Length: 103
Image (cartoon, rainbow, N blue to C red; front, side, top):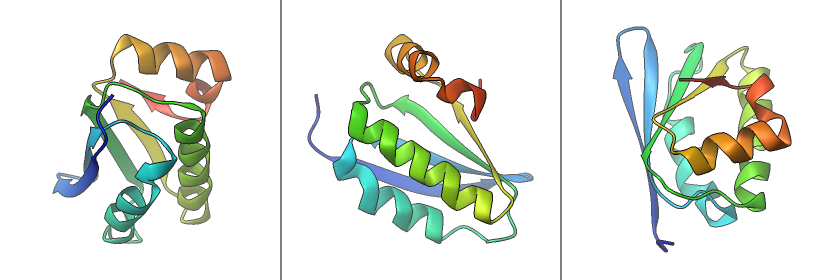
């Protein structure tokens, strides 16, 4: 597992992509929400690109739930892309795949 985490938002067409790098844990919260807070509040689709993130734990799941709630307050949706099998399995096991678009 890597110890550092970064999240960088980039506008692409009609959506904002947040490129995540590092393990998705409770320690990821500050960097993730700083990136999210830089996004136009009228943006309706936020995509987390997880290509450079290999691991998520229970604190990372709680962080995703918090992010979903924050985006719901803005009437925005969350989609995850470029996930490895670990992420997909965890999200399906805990039932988050029903609340997040997966690609």
